[in-house]
Length: 92
Image 1 (cartoon, one colour):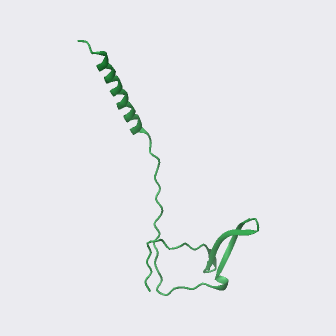
Image 2 (cartoon, one colour; image 1 turned 45 degrees about the vertical axis):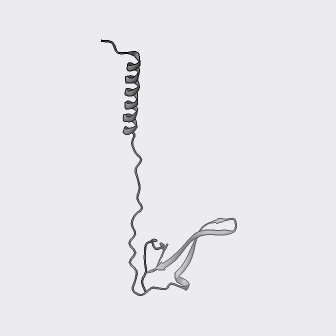
Image 3 (tube, one colour; image 1 turned 90 degrees about the horizontal axis):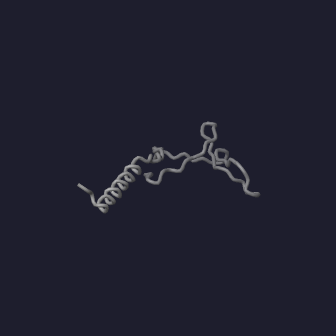
């Protein structure tokens, strides 16, 4: 029993295609990262910070313009505030 050359060529191409699909399936996928979930608990009475409780931490300069972060003093420690998540709803 002889296999026709065109059928043999078809089997060879099919085998190479299957091997390529298998090799691509073995490629390791990069890890996915998810942002940590932040739970915002609105306070019943808003706290207003002013004067000596608000500051600007200068980290560098861009020419003569200071570059840094806004900080607030909470219990004597300077901390960087976080903006509320976009889905947060504050009810008065």
